[in-house]
Amino acid sequence: MRSLFWRIFASFWLAIALVAGLSMLLGRALNQDSWILNNTPALQGIAETWTERYESAGKGPAQAFLRQHKDQYQVDVQVLGENGQQLVPGTFPARAAAFESRQKNKRLPWRRLTTEYVSPSTDKTYLFIYRIPYPVLNAWHRDSLLWPISALAIALVVLTALSLLLTLSITRPLNRLRGAVHDLGQTSYQQNSLAHLAKRRDELGVLASDFNRMGARLQGLIGSQRQLLRDVSHELRSPLARLRIALALAERASPEEREKLWPRLTKECDRLEALISEILELARLDANPGAVQPIRLEGIVQKLVEYVHISAPEQRVAINIAPGLELQGWPNMLERALDNLLRNALRFNPPGQPIEVSAQAKDGAVLIRVRDHGPGVDDKHLGQLGEPFFRAPGQTAPGHGLGLAIARRAAERHGGKLILENHEDGFCASLVIATQPNAKS
Image (cartoon, rainbow, N blue to C red):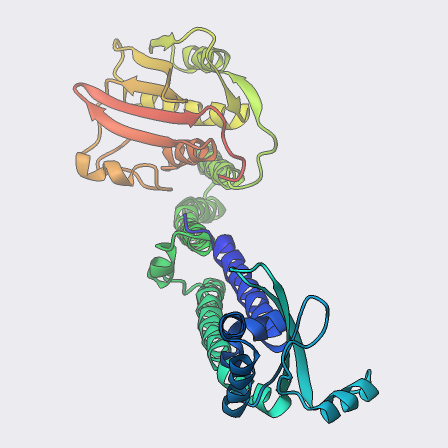
Protein backbone atom coordinates (compact mmCIF):
# COMPACT_ATOMS: atom_id res chain seq x y z
CA MET A 1 0.00 0.00 0.00
CA ARG A 2 1.31 3.42 -0.93
CA SER A 3 0.60 5.07 2.40
CA LEU A 4 -0.58 8.66 2.37
CA PHE A 5 1.26 9.12 5.66
CA TRP A 6 4.62 8.38 4.04
CA ARG A 7 3.88 10.69 1.13
CA ILE A 8 3.13 13.59 3.45
CA PHE A 9 6.09 12.73 5.67
CA ALA A 10 8.48 12.50 2.71
CA SER A 11 7.24 15.78 1.25
CA PHE A 12 7.77 17.72 4.48
CA TRP A 13 11.10 16.01 5.12
CA LEU A 14 12.31 16.89 1.61
CA ALA A 15 11.17 20.49 1.99
CA ILE A 16 12.95 20.86 5.32
CA ALA A 17 16.12 19.21 3.98
CA LEU A 18 16.22 21.45 0.89
CA VAL A 19 15.62 24.64 2.83
CA ALA A 20 18.19 23.70 5.46
CA GLY A 21 20.78 22.71 2.86
CA LEU A 22 20.34 25.84 0.79
CA SER A 23 20.41 28.03 3.90
CA MET A 24 23.71 26.49 4.95
CA LEU A 25 25.10 26.89 1.45
CA LEU A 26 24.13 30.55 1.23
CA GLY A 27 25.45 31.17 4.72
CA ARG A 28 28.80 29.73 3.80
CA ALA A 29 28.89 31.65 0.53
CA LEU A 30 28.19 34.96 2.25
CA ASN A 31 30.03 34.74 5.55
CA GLN A 32 32.86 32.21 5.75
CA ASP A 33 36.44 33.20 4.96
CA SER A 34 37.36 29.69 3.90
CA TRP A 35 34.62 29.73 1.28
CA ILE A 36 35.98 32.97 -0.19
CA LEU A 37 39.58 31.76 -0.06
CA ASN A 38 38.73 28.50 -1.81
CA ASN A 39 36.38 29.89 -4.45
CA THR A 40 37.46 33.46 -5.31
CA PRO A 41 39.30 33.38 -8.68
CA ALA A 42 41.59 36.25 -7.58
CA LEU A 43 43.05 34.10 -4.78
CA GLN A 44 43.38 30.79 -6.59
CA GLY A 45 47.04 29.58 -6.89
CA ILE A 46 48.60 32.83 -5.69
CA ALA A 47 50.37 31.28 -2.68
CA GLU A 48 51.87 28.42 -4.71
CA THR A 49 53.05 30.68 -7.55
CA TRP A 50 54.55 33.37 -5.28
CA THR A 51 56.40 30.82 -3.12
CA GLU A 52 57.89 29.13 -6.15
CA ARG A 53 59.16 32.46 -7.57
CA TYR A 54 60.42 33.72 -4.22
CA GLU A 55 62.40 30.57 -3.45
CA SER A 56 63.73 30.14 -6.98
CA ALA A 57 64.20 33.71 -8.30
CA GLY A 58 64.33 35.93 -5.21
CA LYS A 59 62.47 38.97 -3.94
CA GLY A 60 62.34 40.95 -7.19
CA PRO A 61 60.34 38.54 -9.31
CA ALA A 62 58.15 37.69 -6.29
CA GLN A 63 57.33 41.38 -5.74
CA ALA A 64 56.69 41.87 -9.46
CA PHE A 65 54.23 38.99 -9.38
CA LEU A 66 52.28 40.61 -6.53
CA ARG A 67 52.08 43.95 -8.37
CA GLN A 68 50.98 42.25 -11.57
CA HIS A 69 48.33 40.38 -9.60
CA LYS A 70 47.01 43.59 -8.05
CA ASP A 71 46.79 45.29 -11.43
CA GLN A 72 44.71 42.38 -12.68
CA TYR A 73 42.43 41.65 -9.69
CA GLN A 74 42.61 44.79 -7.47
CA VAL A 75 43.59 42.68 -4.47
CA ASP A 76 46.39 43.73 -2.08
CA VAL A 77 48.71 40.99 -0.86
CA GLN A 78 51.23 40.92 1.99
CA VAL A 79 53.50 37.97 2.77
CA LEU A 80 55.02 37.48 6.23
CA GLY A 81 57.71 35.03 7.16
CA GLU A 82 57.98 32.79 10.17
CA ASN A 83 59.40 35.72 12.19
CA GLY A 84 56.38 37.87 11.41
CA GLN A 85 58.26 40.31 9.13
CA GLN A 86 57.36 41.16 5.56
CA LEU A 87 59.48 39.20 3.09
CA VAL A 88 58.72 41.63 0.21
CA PRO A 89 57.15 45.12 0.23
CA GLY A 90 53.88 43.71 -1.07
CA THR A 91 51.13 45.87 -2.55
CA PHE A 92 49.45 47.26 0.59
CA PRO A 93 50.44 50.93 1.00
CA ALA A 94 51.85 52.10 4.33
CA ARG A 95 49.23 54.80 4.73
CA ALA A 96 46.51 52.18 4.25
CA ALA A 97 48.14 50.04 6.93
CA ALA A 98 48.18 53.02 9.30
CA PHE A 99 44.55 53.75 8.54
CA GLU A 100 43.66 50.10 9.26
CA SER A 101 45.45 50.15 12.60
CA ARG A 102 43.56 53.28 13.67
CA GLN A 103 40.11 51.93 12.73
CA LYS A 104 40.31 48.83 14.98
CA ASN A 105 36.64 47.67 15.37
CA LYS A 106 35.24 50.02 12.75
CA ARG A 107 34.20 48.80 9.33
CA LEU A 108 36.99 49.01 6.76
CA PRO A 109 36.50 49.49 2.99
CA TRP A 110 38.07 46.08 2.33
CA ARG A 111 37.82 42.56 3.68
CA ARG A 112 40.96 41.16 5.31
CA LEU A 113 41.66 37.44 4.91
CA THR A 114 44.68 35.43 6.06
CA THR A 115 45.95 31.96 5.19
CA GLU A 116 49.14 30.00 5.80
CA TYR A 117 51.08 28.10 3.15
CA VAL A 118 53.84 25.56 3.76
CA SER A 119 56.44 25.24 1.01
CA PRO A 120 56.72 21.63 -0.14
CA SER A 121 60.41 22.03 -0.98
CA THR A 122 61.72 23.92 2.08
CA ASP A 123 58.96 23.27 4.67
CA LYS A 124 58.94 26.99 5.44
CA THR A 125 55.64 28.56 6.48
CA TYR A 126 54.42 31.77 4.84
CA LEU A 127 51.50 33.91 6.03
CA PHE A 128 49.54 35.52 3.21
CA ILE A 129 47.35 38.52 4.03
CA TYR A 130 44.75 39.48 1.41
CA ARG A 131 42.75 42.68 1.37
CA ILE A 132 39.83 42.55 -1.06
CA PRO A 133 37.90 45.80 -1.66
CA TYR A 134 34.19 45.32 -1.01
CA PRO A 135 33.15 46.41 -4.53
CA VAL A 136 35.36 43.64 -5.96
CA LEU A 137 34.05 41.13 -3.41
CA ASN A 138 30.43 42.09 -4.05
CA ALA A 139 30.91 41.75 -7.80
CA TRP A 140 32.28 38.27 -7.25
CA HIS A 141 29.38 37.48 -4.87
CA ARG A 142 26.87 38.41 -7.54
CA ASP A 143 28.50 36.04 -9.99
CA SER A 144 29.23 33.24 -7.53
CA LEU A 145 25.77 33.29 -5.96
CA LEU A 146 24.00 32.95 -9.27
CA TRP A 147 23.94 29.17 -9.15
CA PRO A 148 22.88 28.90 -5.45
CA ILE A 149 20.08 31.38 -6.08
CA SER A 150 19.12 29.47 -9.21
CA ALA A 151 19.16 26.24 -7.22
CA LEU A 152 16.98 27.88 -4.57
CA ALA A 153 14.53 29.09 -7.20
CA ILE A 154 14.39 25.64 -8.78
CA ALA A 155 13.92 24.05 -5.35
CA LEU A 156 11.07 26.44 -4.57
CA VAL A 157 9.41 25.63 -7.89
CA VAL A 158 9.79 21.90 -7.24
CA LEU A 159 8.49 22.23 -3.69
CA THR A 160 5.56 24.31 -4.91
CA ALA A 161 4.70 21.67 -7.51
CA LEU A 162 5.03 18.86 -4.97
CA SER A 163 2.91 20.77 -2.45
CA LEU A 164 0.27 21.41 -5.11
CA LEU A 165 0.19 17.76 -6.14
CA LEU A 166 0.05 16.63 -2.52
CA THR A 167 -2.71 19.11 -1.74
CA LEU A 168 -4.73 18.04 -4.77
CA SER A 169 -4.18 14.35 -3.96
CA ILE A 170 -5.87 14.98 -0.60
CA THR A 171 -8.47 17.66 -1.35
CA ARG A 172 -9.88 16.12 -4.55
CA PRO A 173 -10.69 12.76 -2.94
CA LEU A 174 -12.12 14.57 0.09
CA ASN A 175 -14.33 16.65 -2.19
CA ARG A 176 -15.53 13.48 -3.89
CA LEU A 177 -16.24 11.91 -0.52
CA ARG A 178 -18.09 15.04 0.57
CA GLY A 179 -20.19 14.89 -2.59
CA ALA A 180 -20.86 11.19 -1.98
CA VAL A 181 -21.96 11.95 1.60
CA HIS A 182 -24.31 14.63 0.28
CA ASP A 183 -25.73 12.25 -2.34
CA LEU A 184 -26.15 9.56 0.30
CA GLY A 185 -28.09 11.98 2.47
CA GLN A 186 -30.30 12.81 -0.50
CA THR A 187 -30.74 9.05 -1.27
CA SER A 188 -29.24 9.66 -4.74
CA TYR A 189 -25.89 7.97 -4.14
CA GLN A 190 -24.37 6.14 -7.13
CA GLN A 191 -21.91 3.29 -6.64
CA ASN A 192 -19.70 4.40 -9.54
CA SER A 193 -19.19 7.90 -8.08
CA LEU A 194 -16.24 6.62 -6.01
CA ALA A 195 -15.20 3.73 -8.26
CA HIS A 196 -12.04 5.45 -9.51
CA LEU A 197 -11.09 6.69 -6.04
CA ALA A 198 -11.56 3.22 -4.57
CA LYS A 199 -8.79 1.93 -6.86
CA ARG A 200 -6.18 4.01 -5.02
CA ARG A 201 -3.91 1.96 -2.81
CA ASP A 202 -3.66 4.37 0.12
CA GLU A 203 -5.79 5.38 3.08
CA LEU A 204 -8.17 7.43 0.92
CA GLY A 205 -8.70 4.46 -1.39
CA VAL A 206 -9.50 2.24 1.59
CA LEU A 207 -11.87 4.91 2.91
CA ALA A 208 -13.60 5.14 -0.47
CA SER A 209 -13.99 1.34 -0.60
CA ASP A 210 -15.44 1.27 2.90
CA PHE A 211 -17.74 4.16 2.02
CA ASN A 212 -18.91 2.32 -1.10
CA ARG A 213 -19.75 -0.73 0.99
CA MET A 214 -21.50 1.44 3.56
CA GLY A 215 -23.46 3.25 0.84
CA ALA A 216 -24.48 -0.01 -0.78
CA ARG A 217 -25.49 -1.39 2.60
CA LEU A 218 -27.54 1.69 3.49
CA GLN A 219 -29.20 1.78 0.09
CA GLY A 220 -29.98 -1.88 0.40
CA LEU A 221 -31.49 -1.33 3.85
CA ILE A 222 -33.51 1.65 2.67
CA GLY A 223 -34.73 -0.27 -0.36
CA SER A 224 -35.59 -3.34 1.69
CA GLN A 225 -37.42 -1.23 4.26
CA ARG A 226 -39.46 0.46 1.55
CA GLN A 227 -40.21 -2.86 -0.10
CA LEU A 228 -41.08 -4.36 3.29
CA LEU A 229 -43.45 -1.50 4.00
CA ARG A 230 -45.17 -2.01 0.64
CA ASP A 231 -45.35 -5.78 1.19
CA VAL A 232 -46.66 -5.37 4.73
CA SER A 233 -49.35 -2.99 3.51
CA HIS A 234 -50.35 -5.47 0.83
CA GLU A 235 -50.33 -8.50 3.15
CA LEU A 236 -52.28 -6.76 5.92
CA ARG A 237 -54.92 -5.57 3.50
CA SER A 238 -56.20 -9.10 2.74
CA PRO A 239 -56.96 -10.29 6.32
CA LEU A 240 -58.35 -6.88 7.24
CA ALA A 241 -60.65 -6.98 4.21
CA ARG A 242 -61.84 -10.47 5.16
CA LEU A 243 -62.47 -9.30 8.73
CA ARG A 244 -64.41 -6.30 7.47
CA ILE A 245 -66.56 -8.53 5.25
CA ALA A 246 -67.16 -11.00 8.07
CA LEU A 247 -68.16 -8.18 10.44
CA ALA A 248 -70.51 -6.74 7.83
CA LEU A 249 -72.12 -10.16 7.41
CA ALA A 250 -72.38 -10.57 11.17
CA GLU A 251 -74.24 -7.27 11.51
CA ARG A 252 -76.99 -8.43 9.12
CA ALA A 253 -77.01 -12.10 10.20
CA SER A 254 -79.37 -13.79 12.59
CA PRO A 255 -78.11 -15.05 15.97
CA GLU A 256 -77.75 -18.58 14.59
CA GLU A 257 -75.75 -17.38 11.59
CA ARG A 258 -73.55 -15.21 13.83
CA GLU A 259 -72.55 -18.29 15.81
CA LYS A 260 -71.29 -19.77 12.58
CA LEU A 261 -69.31 -16.60 11.74
CA TRP A 262 -67.41 -16.39 15.08
CA PRO A 263 -64.96 -19.23 14.20
CA ARG A 264 -64.25 -17.51 10.90
CA LEU A 265 -63.58 -14.19 12.65
CA THR A 266 -61.36 -15.93 15.21
CA LYS A 267 -59.39 -17.64 12.43
CA GLU A 268 -58.84 -14.36 10.59
CA CYS A 269 -57.71 -12.68 13.82
CA ASP A 270 -55.25 -15.53 14.45
CA ARG A 271 -53.86 -15.18 10.95
CA LEU A 272 -53.49 -11.44 11.40
CA GLU A 273 -51.79 -11.90 14.75
CA ALA A 274 -49.37 -14.49 13.32
CA LEU A 275 -48.53 -12.18 10.40
CA ILE A 276 -47.88 -9.20 12.69
CA SER A 277 -45.76 -11.42 14.95
CA GLU A 278 -43.56 -12.50 12.05
CA ILE A 279 -43.25 -8.92 10.79
CA LEU A 280 -42.11 -7.79 14.24
CA GLU A 281 -39.68 -10.68 14.43
CA LEU A 282 -38.17 -9.69 11.11
CA ALA A 283 -37.88 -6.07 12.26
CA ARG A 284 -36.18 -7.10 15.53
CA LEU A 285 -33.37 -8.73 13.57
CA ASP A 286 -32.22 -5.27 12.45
CA ALA A 287 -32.05 -3.99 16.04
CA ASN A 288 -29.00 -4.27 18.27
CA PRO A 289 -28.98 -7.90 19.47
CA GLY A 290 -26.64 -7.25 22.41
CA ALA A 291 -23.50 -9.15 23.34
CA VAL A 292 -22.77 -12.54 21.79
CA GLN A 293 -23.13 -15.66 23.91
CA PRO A 294 -21.86 -19.24 23.60
CA ILE A 295 -24.37 -21.47 21.81
CA ARG A 296 -24.68 -25.24 22.21
CA LEU A 297 -26.20 -26.15 18.89
CA GLU A 298 -27.18 -29.67 19.88
CA GLY A 299 -29.37 -28.39 22.72
CA ILE A 300 -31.26 -25.98 20.45
CA VAL A 301 -31.89 -28.66 17.81
CA GLN A 302 -33.10 -31.17 20.39
CA LYS A 303 -35.60 -28.66 21.80
CA LEU A 304 -36.94 -27.85 18.34
CA VAL A 305 -37.26 -31.56 17.46
CA GLU A 306 -39.37 -32.08 20.58
CA TYR A 307 -41.75 -29.37 19.32
CA VAL A 308 -41.91 -31.17 15.98
CA HIS A 309 -42.88 -34.43 17.69
CA ILE A 310 -45.71 -32.62 19.48
CA SER A 311 -47.05 -30.66 16.51
CA ALA A 312 -46.44 -33.29 13.82
CA PRO A 313 -46.05 -36.73 15.42
CA GLU A 314 -46.24 -38.42 12.01
CA GLN A 315 -42.98 -36.73 10.94
CA ARG A 316 -39.55 -38.11 11.79
CA VAL A 317 -36.37 -36.01 12.19
CA ALA A 318 -32.90 -37.51 11.75
CA ILE A 319 -30.17 -35.56 13.61
CA ASN A 320 -26.48 -35.66 12.75
CA ILE A 321 -24.57 -33.02 14.73
CA ALA A 322 -20.84 -33.13 15.44
CA PRO A 323 -20.30 -33.79 19.19
CA GLY A 324 -19.46 -30.73 21.30
CA LEU A 325 -20.11 -28.29 18.46
CA GLU A 326 -20.33 -24.75 19.83
CA LEU A 327 -20.28 -21.27 18.38
CA GLN A 328 -20.67 -17.66 19.47
CA GLY A 329 -23.86 -15.76 18.64
CA TRP A 330 -27.38 -15.01 19.80
CA PRO A 331 -29.27 -18.17 20.86
CA ASN A 332 -32.80 -16.82 20.45
CA MET A 333 -32.08 -15.50 16.96
CA LEU A 334 -30.51 -18.77 15.81
CA GLU A 335 -33.30 -20.82 17.39
CA ARG A 336 -35.90 -18.74 15.56
CA ALA A 337 -34.08 -19.26 12.25
CA LEU A 338 -33.84 -23.04 12.72
CA ASP A 339 -37.47 -23.20 13.84
CA ASN A 340 -38.56 -21.49 10.61
CA LEU A 341 -36.45 -23.87 8.50
CA LEU A 342 -37.94 -26.90 10.31
CA ARG A 343 -41.48 -25.56 9.95
CA ASN A 344 -40.89 -24.95 6.28
CA ALA A 345 -39.62 -28.52 5.88
CA LEU A 346 -42.66 -29.87 7.75
CA ARG A 347 -45.04 -28.16 5.31
CA PHE A 348 -43.66 -30.01 2.30
CA ASN A 349 -42.04 -33.20 3.61
CA PRO A 350 -44.20 -36.31 2.95
CA PRO A 351 -44.91 -38.66 5.91
CA GLY A 352 -42.60 -41.66 6.05
CA GLN A 353 -39.55 -39.73 4.83
CA PRO A 354 -37.26 -38.25 7.52
CA ILE A 355 -36.31 -34.62 7.75
CA GLU A 356 -32.51 -34.52 8.03
CA VAL A 357 -30.80 -31.99 10.31
CA SER A 358 -26.99 -31.95 10.27
CA ALA A 359 -24.30 -29.59 11.55
CA GLN A 360 -20.54 -29.56 11.22
CA ALA A 361 -17.59 -27.19 11.38
CA LYS A 362 -16.26 -26.16 7.99
CA ASP A 363 -13.64 -23.55 7.00
CA GLY A 364 -13.90 -21.52 10.21
CA ALA A 365 -17.71 -21.56 10.21
CA VAL A 366 -20.55 -23.87 11.19
CA LEU A 367 -22.68 -25.40 8.42
CA ILE A 368 -26.25 -26.32 9.48
CA ARG A 369 -28.45 -28.16 6.97
CA VAL A 370 -32.17 -28.88 7.07
CA ARG A 371 -33.14 -31.27 4.27
CA ASP A 372 -36.62 -32.49 3.35
CA HIS A 373 -38.02 -34.80 0.67
CA GLY A 374 -40.70 -32.48 -0.66
CA PRO A 375 -41.31 -31.29 -4.23
CA GLY A 376 -38.61 -28.60 -4.10
CA VAL A 377 -38.76 -25.27 -5.91
CA ASP A 378 -38.35 -24.34 -9.54
CA ASP A 379 -34.71 -23.28 -10.09
CA LYS A 380 -35.71 -19.93 -11.54
CA HIS A 381 -37.35 -18.99 -8.23
CA LEU A 382 -34.49 -20.08 -5.93
CA GLY A 383 -32.89 -16.62 -6.03
CA GLN A 384 -36.10 -14.98 -4.79
CA LEU A 385 -36.63 -17.32 -1.87
CA GLY A 386 -35.74 -15.55 1.35
CA GLU A 387 -37.21 -12.23 0.22
CA PRO A 388 -40.00 -11.03 2.52
CA PHE A 389 -43.49 -12.21 1.48
CA PHE A 390 -42.24 -14.10 -1.56
CA ARG A 391 -43.83 -17.50 -2.11
CA ALA A 392 -43.03 -19.69 -5.06
CA PRO A 393 -45.93 -20.06 -7.51
CA GLY A 394 -48.07 -23.14 -6.96
CA GLN A 395 -47.43 -23.44 -3.21
CA THR A 396 -50.60 -24.14 -1.26
CA ALA A 397 -49.08 -24.65 2.18
CA PRO A 398 -50.07 -22.02 4.75
CA GLY A 399 -47.63 -19.21 5.47
CA HIS A 400 -46.80 -15.61 4.67
CA GLY A 401 -43.37 -15.93 3.06
CA LEU A 402 -41.48 -14.56 6.06
CA GLY A 403 -39.91 -17.70 7.54
CA LEU A 404 -37.02 -17.92 5.08
CA ALA A 405 -36.55 -14.14 5.22
CA ILE A 406 -36.13 -14.37 9.01
CA ALA A 407 -33.68 -17.25 8.64
CA ARG A 408 -31.64 -15.40 6.03
CA ARG A 409 -31.45 -12.23 8.10
CA ALA A 410 -30.45 -14.22 11.20
CA ALA A 411 -27.63 -15.87 9.23
CA GLU A 412 -26.43 -12.46 8.02
CA ARG A 413 -26.41 -11.09 11.58
CA HIS A 414 -24.17 -14.02 12.49
CA GLY A 415 -21.78 -13.09 9.68
CA GLY A 416 -23.01 -15.91 7.43
CA LYS A 417 -25.60 -16.62 4.78
CA LEU A 418 -28.59 -18.80 3.88
CA ILE A 419 -28.15 -21.22 0.97
CA LEU A 420 -31.27 -22.68 -0.64
CA GLU A 421 -30.99 -25.45 -3.21
CA ASN A 422 -32.81 -28.46 -4.63
CA HIS A 423 -31.41 -31.95 -4.32
CA GLU A 424 -32.30 -35.21 -6.02
CA ASP A 425 -35.47 -35.90 -4.06
CA GLY A 426 -36.29 -32.76 -2.14
CA PHE A 427 -35.10 -29.39 -0.88
CA CYS A 428 -32.17 -28.32 1.30
CA ALA A 429 -31.78 -25.11 3.35
CA SER A 430 -28.27 -24.46 4.74
CA LEU A 431 -27.20 -21.90 7.32
CA VAL A 432 -23.53 -20.89 7.22
CA ILE A 433 -22.77 -19.29 10.61
CA ALA A 434 -19.46 -17.59 11.44
CA THR A 435 -17.89 -18.82 14.69
CA GLN A 436 -17.23 -15.17 15.77
CA PRO A 437 -20.06 -12.99 14.42
CA ASN A 438 -19.95 -9.21 14.33
CA ALA A 439 -22.76 -7.43 16.14
CA LYS A 440 -22.68 -4.70 13.47
CA SER A 441 -23.34 -7.06 10.56
